[in-house]
Length: 79
Image (cartoon, rainbow, N blue to C red; front, side, top):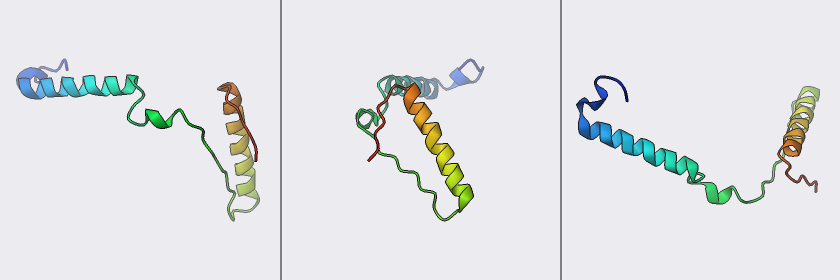
């Protein structure tokens, strides 16, 4: 916005400033998908057919998410 040619085309500059303001307002309000962020989430980790390495990675990934859930003070449940 501080470039010497930004304000050369006044209409284009105003449109960009308006777009920036709209994006900021959307980000502050939680974005277009905010209504879905209030719900629960179900996550499944599959090892697939990768053998021991895939199982090890799945276990590491699971522990990583367990720690993240604990830090965020969310509730974790197992079926």
